[in-house]
Length: 460
Image (cartoon, rainbow, N blue to C red; front, side, top):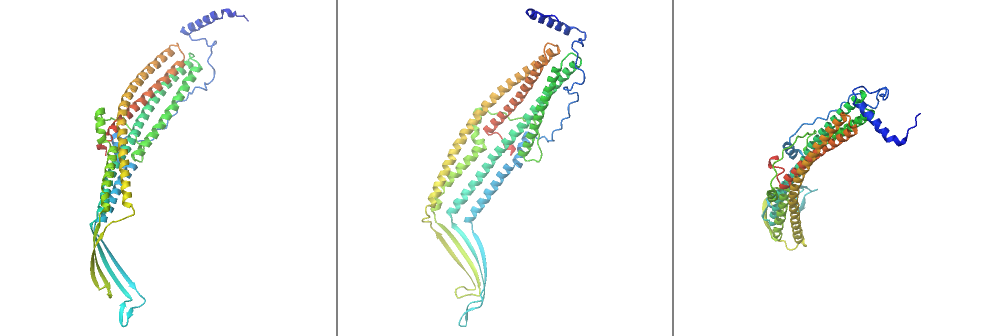
């Protein structure tokens, strides 16, 4: 065996590399005896076709406006709010009955063991039948009038709360709808990346079969395809869950698919700030609560006023007695003057004053929060637009880098590590574009909601 002079090792290395490059550039088939391909089946290369993916569960498509409209009809929370209005109306009817006339009838049959007599005269017969009707007509009922007025205020509050609840339901459905759109976009991006990885794998496998490549390149490419397969399945799972969640929020029995929505034009910031107070249901609902609290406090005087009622009672008594004829009637005027109730009225007054203060403080907080949401939404829209533009530029550059890496790999200038790295970067950049698109849609939705323009009146 010849002994190498290690002092000339760098020169020998250069010569060997030159010979390798020269051999690669020659059109002749490489020397199979110097570097023979492995014999036998390539167990680590999946020769079988790609497995068939199970289809996604069926999901009918619904437009954005229709999804919002259906949710306000079918959603359980919206239905509960609607029943709250009916309950408030029923309570108002119950309260009103306190100052409307009432008529009650009574009948009594009495059986004694025997007649009660005084000498030969029957004082109380063994069988007695008596009947009467009582008509009560409130003439002056300030306490009941005040209670009925407070109950009518609760109807207005329930209606305002229903509008606020509808806004919350619509926002939840809108966000779920946009999530479906975003997940579809992510699935599209990941499937495209998987297609690119499969094409690279097929090319690497073909080169290796022809004796120009190596096992490492094929295994790397196959591993990247498997990785993208896993990412695609995750995206499919997320899409199925998003569709089911959307269908549940809308109130349907099936999953719902979504399409790209078209939002209304965003208002200027000055207009949004000025319109917000009159258009937002949550602000209006709190204003109604404050108005009801002030009105309730203004009716405190009614608890100090007298109460006057007229009572009429026809009767029938058989057999008649010494004090009750066979038939007759009686009438009364009953005046009730509240003199002292142990401090109940003062407690009511203090409670109503506290409720008014709470309502005012809550309204001030809601207005501050609403103005902040408008300003934040405008900034978020501008930043999301800028971020989307940057991510799109990055995705274009990543795609160009992938194409250049593929060209270099086909020319034999590089290995497939650069190609696989470029594939991953292009895939991640495309996913970031989908995320940025969703962020922009969400920001526009937040702006419309903060300004009070979502949901629109047509949605109701």
